[in-house]
Amino acid sequence: MDNMLLLVLGFIMLAAAVWIKANRLWAKTGLPGGQVVYDDVIQTENGDWYPQREPLYSQQLQLVGRPDYLVREHDGSLTPVEVKSSPAPQQPYEGHLLQLAAYCVLVEENFGVRPQYGIIQYRNQAFAVEFSPDLEEDLYNLLVEMREDLYAGELDRDHNDWRRCGRCSMRGQCVQRLG
Ligand code: SF4
Image (cartoon, rainbow, N blue to C red; front, side, top):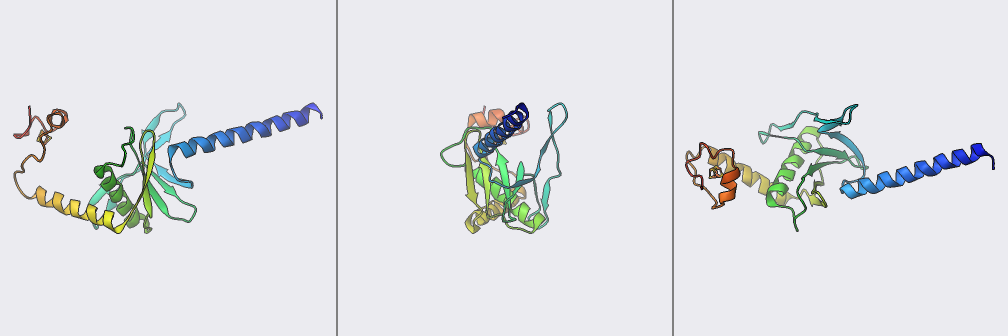
């Protein structure tokens, strides 16, 4: 075997190793296979990442939001992905589920294709969450509640969490703050 052939074989083996490694890394993210339609970050020449695309808007629900990723699956359907920097809980938090449901609605209205599920990617684990009629109904109920609260005038605090008030950006103006 001459040197040229060895070199070519070396390149092929290196390419295969890189391909396998890339697939393992992709699998570790928990993201489904398929082509990413857009993400809200781009990589520049110096490796920095910046926000990119416009938010999605739902006329029907008067809702605006932007999933971290949209993935086009092999069957043509779209999957929104929400990335959280925190470690995974036993089950996704209700707020995260409803946020994902909102993204599913936005995807359906903007792209005309209903996601079968969405992904919540925590730091160490991803959850695939079915976009079921029940989850969709929970979202609608929450939106109705929020809009009713908006026009209800003064609202009572609905928690006794001092830390929550301590972190709240409204604490300066809020007459019901704890602490
Ligand atoms: S400061 Fe007021 S608005 Fe903020 S969390 Fe506390 S009660 Fe709610």
